Image 1 (cartoon, rainbow, N blue to C red):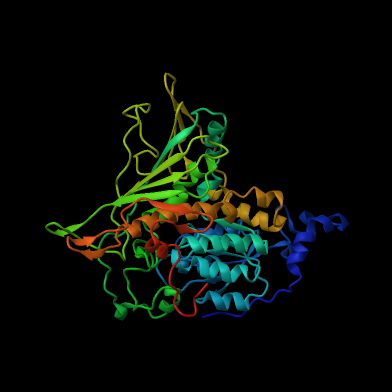
Image 2: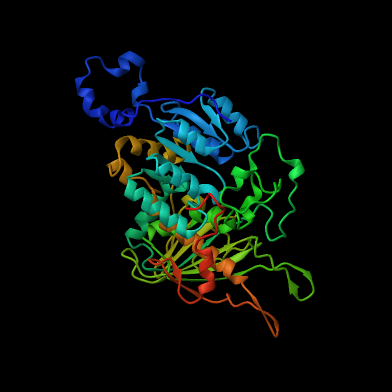
Length: 484
């Protein structure tokens, strides 16, 4: 499903990069010709959204920078869906519309950049297709469905000089700068323990896979494209547009959904990189006495994950990071008064970094940072007024594209793939442990759950070194025609 294609000379991208140098030759200032804030068409980036409903709608609106850049195309597998796609189509009535991202990339020859806001399992395929055409990419969190894909996108972006950003907008929150200042100043000393948690899942999870209902498929929805690299199955209204998050074939569970938002804060402040080990436990559901449900295709109702890191240049102590979800949160450390909230007000999501001199806490996206030190009053931070949607996370990516790869603007991005790739790999390490936890084989006692152990990780080789069966979750099996 498409309209006419937009044809733009191939030299236009080079023209944008050279426009500042050429501006010294202009006799009439541009603002005289077009008014204050006017951007000449030749200086506009041509951008598109792949996944235009849900979070994709705000991603493309913010990337257009109030109309400064030109949205030439929108893409969504459900063109008349109730997930916001019809509204965004009305917001950009001149944009060509597609249901197939491959047709969009083939037809829109002058395309400079795309926002990718689709389900987790299709991020890597779409982003790779764009980068192979030298199109700059903004990809929603988590960057990919699995670790191999994250490494592949990170290396491709670097090799092809693509300007990238992941959609964990809290990375651009100025509150995180305050946390970084406290860490760098040694306010809490060496950090040895980090506790991170979320109230997710808020979607169905820990239940059997719902049965397909192909008779209910909307007339214009392209289900085969929604499946992408996943195995071919009949349409299920239980998956699109939101609840796919709870199933490993498509989503990455509570940890994948919120980890790149919450783990981002200590990962950045402490200079973390690849973990060295991971282990977990997860909540069980009992329908029958003594027999827990075994649902390896679905994410668990709740979990606890412990991830180990070596000391870093910013922190002299090894670090244990403890993740919990499904309504499980940490208890108050002694330094934090009993009546103080943990993380975000209401305790739903948060971070606690415990050092040998004090504690730092924040909420989701880095909001509400607080510093606790023994015998001293709690130090809080007054958040500056937010003058730009999502802290300018998408706009900064657009500006970096215009400035060019390796420009100061590019290097200042808070979640380019050089950073967000390793962050995503850390998040997905937890999912390897969760999936390994349910590995089993028959034994004299019924079943032997042989994956319930501490898993040792070689980050450079992307390999669990002490349980070969766990390495099946480092990547995935791809449907024919969707291999990477």
